[in-house]
Image 1 (cartoon, rainbow, N blue to C red):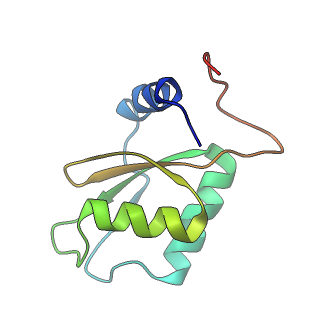
Image 2 (cartoon, rainbow, N blue to C red; image 1 turned 120 degrees about the vertical axis):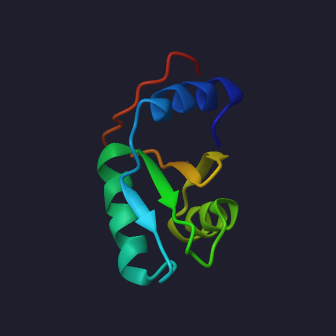
Length: 98
């Protein structure tokens, strides 16, 4: 569980990021979920864009992804979502606040 201060730090990191993945009309499949999980294992934070032709809203996609890969939803703005999953072995993001 992340604190509100940590969430604010993650939001500031995400502001500078471009979406790394897109969810389109095919929705979320197991291969995409595995790729996103692998990406999070390395980078800890990911920004995903949900395209207009998708069957999901950004909120629905964020909640489903977070549940399936055990990540935390940092924020959902418009069609973009940001997820965070801490790498316990080798953390990439060092929080200023605890």
